[in-house]
Length: 139
Image (cartoon, rainbow, N blue to C red; front, side, top):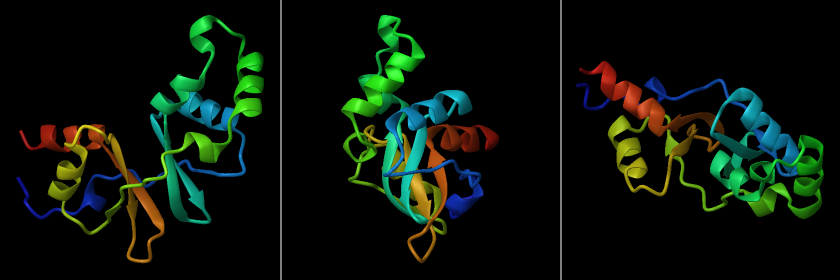
């Protein structure tokens, strides 16, 4: 196993992002249609928050068989992106070792880390799935 391999080796750099002025229903659609679990919230290219599919499930009426249009109207009338996103953001530098990502993700409260360049701008995201795939490749 390579002990000092950087996070940039396993991160996803083809990112879908949202900004705070977007509608919450747009985030819901982005997550479901692209089958992803985390979407960074950005101001320009700087990450300011993160929304997970778990965050959205807490708000959604889908579990009650509510039609998509009613669910979208409900989400947009009741919530803003800033209310839904996690804003106590934990990030990792692209050059930091994968081990550091593993340490941060192993806390159990995080399932993804936005990856930032030296300028603090978003360059990728690393998830627990990325980490597990990397570990599997080692064996």
